[in-house]
Image 1 (cartoon, rainbow, N blue to C red):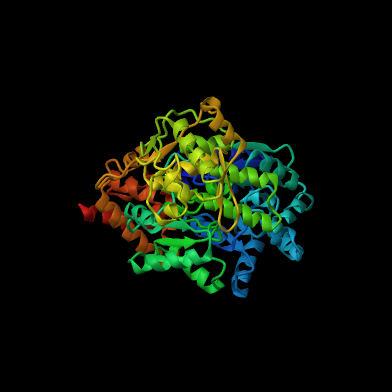
Image 2: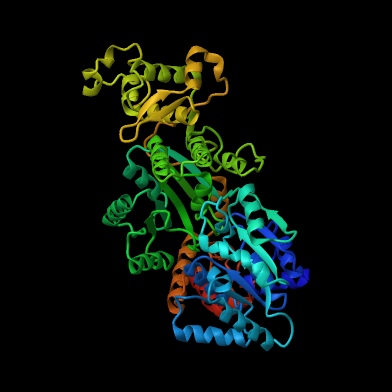
Length: 613
């Protein structure tokens, strides 16, 4: 069995080794044992149920929530030489007939379907067609196993609950002798328990990989001049693919228009656009006709583009689960990518107001928001904070891949003193003003608002005059996250002391663990330090050859009508540009090139390498 899986892995995917937990996950499918697999985006989750379909009898049914996700995965499988298809409501009658004939004739190893197709109304005719397909195989069952992708959608505790996934609970009764396999990239222990219960998994093998994505560089910025902050990120990623998430459709349209006006190939994406325009913009991004998508969270699941080099959140999401999932769309090919959160305290207030108006502000939601706020304003390693949230111990002392560990944050030497000055100022202005006004008083600003209220005469006026207003606003955000301050009011939020804040004012020793930090003061022409992963991934790579190979990949993709990443990932192109194979046989040893791709694209790739010199 193991040699068969290894052979399949090499022949169809061009891989010579399994990633962590992949072999155990595949063994569970081959042996017919139920399983739940949680692997981070980019961790090879899909391969866990794709490769076994070429080893065990019967078709592997894959339940997928989105039509675009089905198409992307099937395009990639077919390019690798794997007999695969999808069957969904968006297909034309002729397309359905062709796939139905393939099912009846038992031609497919993998078949992607929607939840409704297997367990919803009208599923009986489809199941009958599967049975006929089993008869055509002469031996073995019609269905070898069922894999439920994006399985967190079945749980009401998950970050992307979808009611239609609840129908999948009927699969156990309909397919009594067939093993079920749930997979997802993000699931807390509570969500995992719910998945097992809802799908009635029987003694499942539960495999939970590391939640850490070491190739991602995490940065957090207090929101100041958003466009300038975005320009800094974009300058590091010229011509590269990226996603910018916004909290409102209005901001999406405004930023997409601004970027396009500045020569960036950017498109908007949100639920307010008509279906045709959304699909055109999504396709433009996948086909590399657009570099940047500015979007609400409506954009994401099903986006299989592997070379997204940056994800920016222009506002905090409502939970760390959401942030892990959305930022995790960067660097799916395992190469370096940047994840930037640009936030303000108003983000969390907006979420609380919105959830309260919708009757959804439960204690659980409050906790999720609080954890997101602590991450945003936290002082420490971002990688450690994220994996610790999901219950994993982070062993490394230094991730070398976040703003803190790269030395971009500067710890405040006397955090308790600074905190008490801010808390005292909030008290002196009567707990009736917002963070901007408090920062102006502390910095000694001579603004009209400060003078009109006589606040220049307060004892706290100018107590932090050596700091900038932006820095003091950052300290205030951190004190909000530490629950030493709170914001009250909806339209015009004001700062107020919490009981813990009052305690710190009375007793300087009340919070010995308090830490505050600020962004290091900008220096002229200062470029952020590159992460260790980025340095290593480009070592010995001929960058000119890499760009030449990217152009070749795009031309091949255009001729075949598929996204470029279906042809090769950037990981493979960099390896080619590193080792410079001059024959098709030498190309077969490159990571990500199996027999089918070597035969189909090998001569063109080798010609490009030889022609480069």
